[in-house]
Length: 113
Length: 113
Image 1 (tube, rainbow over the protein chains, first blue to last red):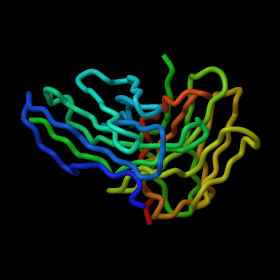
Image 2: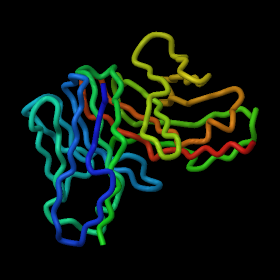
Image 3: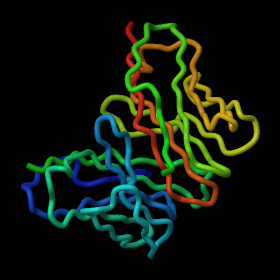
Image 4: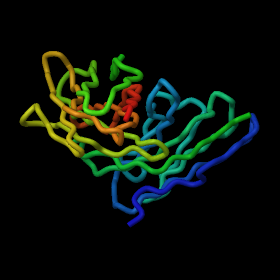
C-alpha cells in the first residue's frame, strides 16, 4: 500500500515550457487535490476533484489545468511555465465526506528559470 | 473572503516549555477542523481533527486542540515540547458538505535541546 505517490520528485523548467505532474493513490479515495506550498503562504489549493469525472477550481487555478484520468490518478499540467510557478506541489486524497482527513504525497519541487 | 489565519509564523521554544499555536477561521456555519504537521523533509501528516462532540480533542504525540466556536478558533497545545517536535504546523478547515479544504500559512516551531 503505497498511499499517495507523485512523479517527478524534482523538475527544472525554462519559462514557457510545459509539463505534467502525476499523482496516483491506491486507497480507493474519491477526492483528490493539488496544492502548492510557498514560504510564508502555507498550502494553497490549486484544483480539486470530488469524484472521478469532476474537477473544481481552488484559490489559485490560473496557469494550471488538471485531469482526473480515473479514480486513482489526478494530474496537474502547466501549459506555459512561469517563474511565479516555482514552488513545491503536493497532491492529496481523501475519503468522501468532510470529516475525513487528507493523505499527502511526498511533493514535487519545481523550479522555473 | 473565507480564510484561515495562523498568528505565529515562527515560534522558538526550549525543551519542556509549553506550546500554544493559534488558528482562527472566518467560515460561517458548521466546519471541520484539522491540524497537520510537516517534519523537515517529509510530507504533511495529520495530528488531530475535530468535527463534532467534545471540543477538546487529543491527537498523536501528546498534542491537543480546543475548538471555541464563539471565537472561531482551534488552537493547538502541548504541555511540554521535545526537540523532535521541531516542524511546521498547519491548521486546515473545511465547511460541512464542502470538499474544498483550506490551509493556514503555517507556523514553524523550533525546539532547542
